Amino acid sequence: MGFEETDDIVTLAAKAETEMVQCHLTVVNAGISEPSSTRRLAQEVSEKARAYLEVRGKEVTVEMITLRDLADDIAKGSVGDKYGERLDSAIAAVGAADGLVVASPIYKASYSGLFKAFWDLVPRDAIINMPVVLAATGGSNRHALVPDVVMRGLFAFFRAVPTATSLMATKEDFGTPELEKRERRAAGELGALMLSNVRHQPLNEPVDHVNW
Image (cartoon, rainbow, N blue to C red; front, side):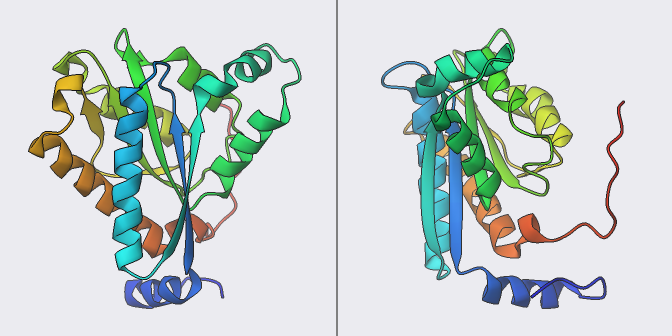
């Protein structure tokens, strides 16, 4: 069942409700320590998004991609060498998802090199219209704007659909009502976008690639 140009928002929502019974959520985590606060943040958001969707009758699968485990292959891909099937599978899981949670530690006011190197290998059309939560962890609240100022620009390039609420957490934030509230809000926004089926709505017109 496709979406017609004349469909109103109520019709689109009804179609999405009937078409999308199973939801696949992919989590991309660039944490490198063990245990990792970056992985913890991503996992907490994905669990809340799963709960949001399950309450609304959806079957949800969550796949965690830990970039630390793929670092060797990512390095090979970064210099044009052939990389292994695990990285191929991770990239495929990103493209096949109905929604994403992406999380990176912050280094020198930006996402990590490992995080960026992974996304450099993802085809630029792979996540068009993809709902995504942007999350980051850092040593202090001086980095609070990194998800919106730095990460949001990267996913605008991919023409993804980031949630309005982004997340930045320090170690001291975990377990606080404030972070819990923001996680729940971001997860709810992600779930609502996934339920709207925005990911699978075709563009009205084909978009030619432009080299800026």
